[in-house]
Image 1: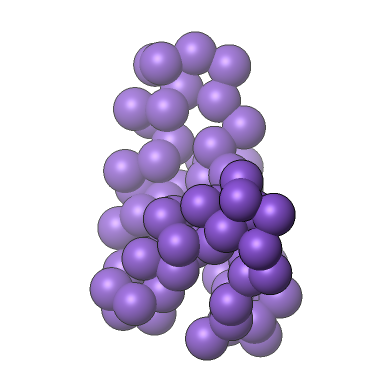
Image 2: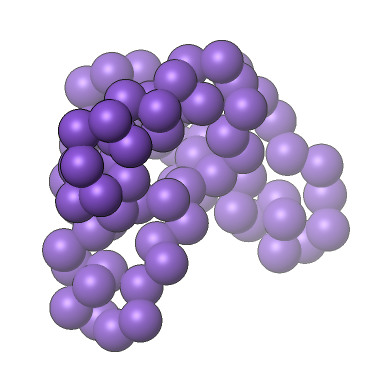
Length: 79
């Protein structure tokens, strides 16, 4: 989730989350937010982490394309 990628859950959890993305095992990044403040705290650093580690295409896929596909009932894509 976004908090894991943002490092909020700790360094080891962040590294595991990055590994899931690297291995193509993550279809999207969910916020697990319970408030607008959580979204603001979790999502921007998670997005920056994914962009720095995997590039803008991964950001598009994990934060936009695949969540939209799931909402439409269409299969997700992977990198």
